Image (cartoon, rainbow, N blue to C red; front, side, top):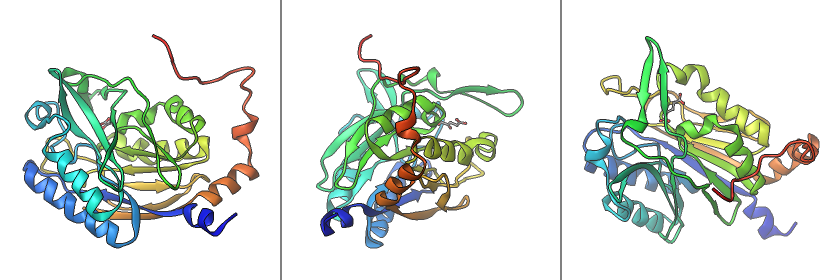
Length: 284
Ligand SMILES: O=C(O)CCC(=O)C(=O)O
């Protein structure tokens, strides 16, 4: 392996666990300064949380929604360019054609909008006495897979509830991703029960890196986020995490290590695709 290839097989990832308030301007300026801080620590890819510019809740989405491009994506594009980082812009409520989406905009290190991921699986759950949440009351689902290239590896993006669907992660893995990123905001019921477990499961099943970015916990908000933004390696180990406060979580991603794990336990090539296969829907 050449020196350049070896250098490109390692990079630093930063996950920003932002304290999100109901003042959009403050959310944007705090995010901007933490992106700069993360870049100053050598990060090449920076991730913001789900709904980083708005409180999370069906009652807020229309009020905070923006078109793309708009105020929030303009800030993200400039921050990506100024700091020369790939930027996964968490998610924002997006308005398009009268519909609202939970959308993650992704920027290249020159500030170009590379893609947007509209949350595919809407968060509609009802756990009696604990939590009822129905995103579909106000949001529409996206219907596209979202993978982008970096000089290091392909990256697949999902938003929060999307992590519960193992097939999506498998498809991204088949598409060649070495890292899956899920901006997310689990809560005080499903957070302790499932947040880390799901990340480790997706990482282990597919032998790749998984990163999540949550808002920091705010006990006074109507939806209390679990926090605990985390990075898991292809062996299924948590390599970096945090508690519930605002923080930047750093992890060094090593794609040679990923290749080593895949050689040691070669489940990705042992799959019985002759008996079963997960394939993308190409026609509807
Ligand atoms: O799946 C869960 O338990 C939480 C999902 C969620 O909060 C979301 O999709 O925004």
